[in-house]
Amino acid sequence: MENANRDSQIGMQLPNPHLANMTKDNLYHLGMSRTSHDLPALFGDVKFVCLGGSARRMENFAYFIGQELGVLSTNERPPNLASNSERFVLYKAGPVLSANVCIYEHGIGVPSMLVVLHEILKMLHYAGSSEVTFIRIGTCGGIGVPPGSVIVSNAAVNGKLEHTYETVVLGKGIQRPINVDQELASEIHSCSRTEDPFSVILGKTYCTDDFFEGQARTGGAVCDINDGDEHRFLKQLDSEGVKNIEMESAGFFALCHKAGVKCGVVCVTFIDRLSTEDVPTDTDILSEWTQRPQILVARFIKKQLTNGV
Image (cartoon, rainbow, N blue to C red; front, side, top):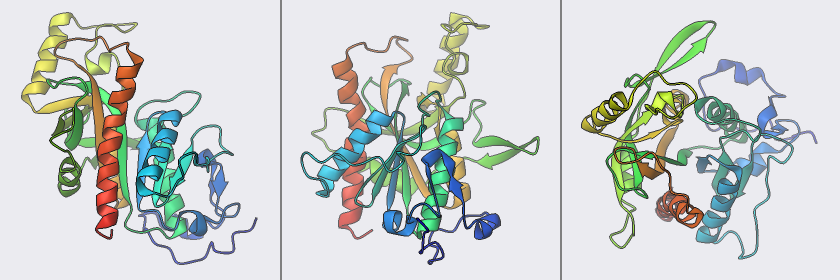
C-alpha cells in the first residue's frame, strides 16, 4: 500500500544527504520499503535495537524481552516483520527490535552485519524514531576468563590491534574510528547481580575478519603459523587487556558512531583460548550460556524504560 506517512517528521538524523530524495527507498534485505510499509506506524516508537547471530536466537530473545516487558502473552510468538525477505528476520516487542546479522544462506562477521545495520538505521530514520540504542548480543571466544563469562566491551580493536575499522569506498580505504560509549558500557555492566551464576566483565574486544587464521588458530584448511606463534599471540592479547575475540564489533562500533547512535556489545564466552580450542559439545550448556547476555541486556532495557528513556 502507499505509505501516506512517508513524509512525516524525520527523527533519527543520518549523515547521508541523498536520503532526502529517496522517497521510494527499497530496504531490499529486510523485504520492505517506504511505499510498501507504514514505517512510522510500525517502528516510530522503537528505542532499542538488539542484533545477534542466528535467526532462531533473536526470535527467542524477542519472545523473552516481550515477556519481561509484559507486552507479549505467555503463548504469543512475535511475527517476523521481515517475512518478505529470505535473508534476515526482524521481530518487535514493544519498543524493542530484535534482528539477526547472519544471512540465512551464508554470512558471519562484519560484512553481513553491516548490510542489515545500514537498512535498520534507514528504516528507523524514515520511521521518525529517536534516541535509539543499538546493542549487539553474541557469542565469542574468551581470553583468560572462564567459559560462560559475559563480556561487555569497553574498547575494541581490529585484526591489526588498531582502534579503527577500514571500509573500502571507490577503491580506496577509509579509516573510521572504533569509538565505544563508556557510559553505556558501564550502565550495562552495572546490571549484573551478585547472585548471578556467571561473571560480567568490562574488557577490550579483538575483532577479526576470519575465524581460523585471523584468530591465530592452527586448525584451518591452511596455516602458516605454529602452536608457539598461536600461544605467544594470545598471551600478547591477554597482556593488552583483551578479554574476548569475535567478528562484528569493529564494524558495529564504527558505523554506529558514524551514524550518530549509541551502541554497545555484550557477548558470552564459549571457551578460554588460553586453555583450549574445544568448544563444549553439551547443547544444554551452550543454550544456557547463550541466554546470559540476553538476561543482562533485558535488565538494562527494563531499567532504562523504568527511568523514562
